[in-house]
Image (cartoon, rainbow, N blue to C red; front, side, top):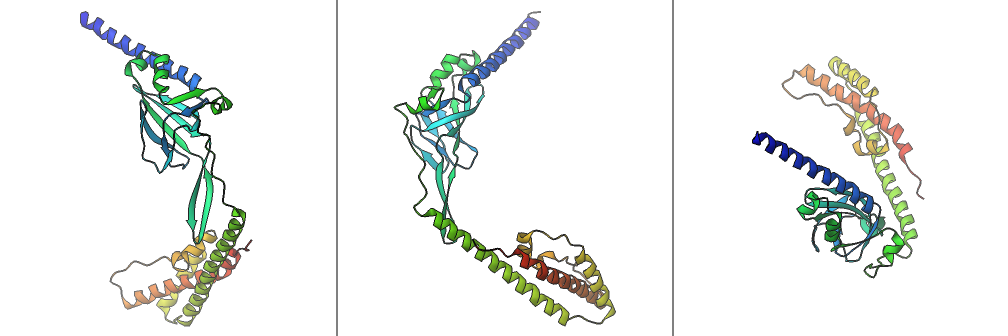
Length: 287
């Protein structure tokens, strides 16, 4: 009997703890989600659009992402997720970061949104007891919470960071880059057109009159006629070789080898002719 009572007590305690945690999650979400915070700790993010991990214990933060942000960053809380002894806050920094990359001879820039998942350690007793005040005291070591952005911007802790502007004359750089990309693309198309034309000549010069070869040639032609042609990028990337169906290797008679040779040549002829017809439509006008 005592064991049954003890078991019921354990179940009841677990149920109450779960209920308290659920109530705490809802109350914290109601107070924190959508609000603005000024970070009293530095954080790191890769600014790739995903929430990157930063573990928070008191005022100590550990993170390993590429870009670091100093104390005083302004952010908005998108979502919270409560665990037994941890609260995960998904934040989007108010100001994006200017990031750069290299494309050929050009250095290009964009403004990237930076997001952080701040995994804040909490007293287990505060979560189990549904103690909102204790949770917020723990968070206050690292965050100042405000209901509105303009209120947060009035904080003395705000670092007032603004995204770095694009370099002077960047519009001209973008125009030059667009012309360069068009020229690069057209050069690749012209190269494939030349390959297709040369392949057409090679195949027509080596066509044989042998019956086994011609049988394979006809099969290759029929197969290539049913090809599904991709967009320009796929045709340029693949070239003639990218559209051929190879015959299995192995021990074969002389007749089978002639058949296989014809089968490949039939495909090559159709593919090279079709690419020669389609690829000019892939040329682009340089802006």
